[in-house]
Amino acid sequence: MNKEKLNEAVRSRRTFAIISHPDAGKTTITEQMLLLGGVVRQAGTVKGRKTGKFATSDWMEIEKQRGISVTSSVMQFDYNGKRINILDTPGHEDFSEDTYRTLMAVDSAIMVIDSAKGIEPQTKKLFQICKMRGIPIFTFMNKLDRDGREPLDLLAELEDVLGVETYPMNWPIGMGKGLQGLYDRYNQQVALYHPDADGQQYLPLNEDGDIAEENSLHQESIWRDTLDEIDLINAAGNELDQEKIKTGDLTPVFFGSALANFGVETFLKTYLDYAPQPAEHETKSNRFVEPTDEIFSGFVFKIQANMDPKHRDRIAFVRICSGTFERGMDVSLQRTDKKLRLSNSTQFMAEERENVQTAVAGDIIGLYDTGNFQIGDTIYTGKEAIQFQDLPQFTPELFVRVNAKNVMKQKSFHKGIQQLVQEGAVQLFRSYTANDYILGAVGQLQFEVFEFRMKNEYNSEVTMEPLGSKIARWIDPEQLDEKMASSRNILVKDSHDMPLFLFENQFSENWFIQKYPDVKLAAKL
Ligand code: G4P
Image (spheres, rainbow, N blue to C red):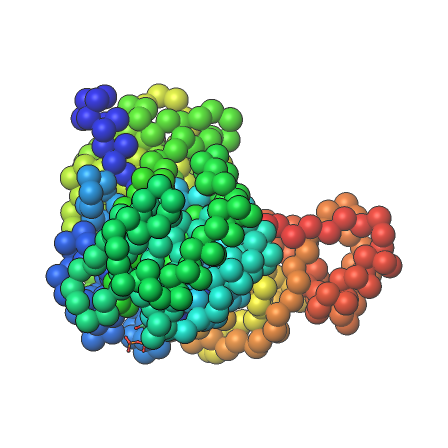
């Protein structure tokens, strides 16, 4: 690809994740976007994945059993001159580090909130990761066709609980059964809501912000209320500050209904105007790799084994950071300094995994892996070695002690643990004295997946003794005295032999801090 074409291709890429609490409407809005992109033709296709029709994220048996999507999948489609990559982040209660790491591979995020519920725990956690990365976050307040909370109340909650400024791009004209439409501040129009009709009707606004032509809405008190509220947010609300959007300090908020497909198209179009194209990536030597650099580079943010039980494959998901990917190209793997030929690769389309021919910065490719890759690996072409910054390691919150059920099967037990830990499925710790295996995760589901995969892929049944939730704090080995271990904490070491305490609760951590004021404790996030 010549330089001009590469520039053009990169400019068209929009790579994002949709974050939400379960049931807020992530699947529904994703599906509406796929419909707009012409990838699926019929509503219900994505939801129908439980029946196997939409199998992209249905790889594992456990997903089917529980009816949830465990693995983050990738969907690509074209819309309005843009090539969109949506990275799915499972938002269910037991979510995992995979979800977190997926957010390392996107350039922006959409936060879907149920307007009757407001901010729920999972949204908050995911938001914090986005905030840490300083990426733009756009909010879709969903389910406007149902009675929800007052819009002003919802904005206040976003500001208070998440610590982010808000800018409402549109404003509901009524809600639930009384929903009449959306006052679109950004496009200076009113979108009328006709629950039974196809398509939307738009009425332009005049200079005073009122509907330009005579309309029946003028007679309704809800219209006067809406204009009052618009006056209020114009006077007292935030400015639409592009710089703050870029850094994630201000979130543009869109109200709408994913299910009724109301406000989704305008949302997607406006979002695409603002969502950033792939940005530069910083290396460990503080060099910035531009997405339009000719050398190819990318990093592995996720490894998934046995996505398709029929093929026993293992796939490394690579976010491309620069250059052009071509099938069969030779790259260097920074960690091992080995050369690899990338002949067996796959790109993620909505309906099936397709072989990828070329891909550029922002795109995600899947590389069939025979054990070469680890999470966080950088691959590149060219003479100069590139190593992107480490992916953050997330502080686990839940712990179990794990053993092989059958002591005669230690070999497969160790092999399974080693591989699954390498894949980043769970984190492994050893107790300091007894050398027991202790697993850590951010969500319970990670343990279930671990147990299931140990049995199915490594033929190793395990017993897991729950240790509950703990506060993990690393301690400088120089400062460690084994006597510091007590009944209120467990002293363990991580996979790099670094010591840490697992505190029972906040109380026991505080107690420790008071007892050893000079000892520094660190959470690794
Ligand atoms: P998730 O992926 O975030 O978990 O949510 P999902 O899209 O699956 O939506 C959760 C439920 O909320 C679904 O209902 C869905 O139909 C409904 N929903 C999504 N968006 C809207 C909306 O704008 N308005 C209303 N009223 N409902 C919405 P369900 O009964 O759990 O599933 P289904 O049987 O309808 O598929």
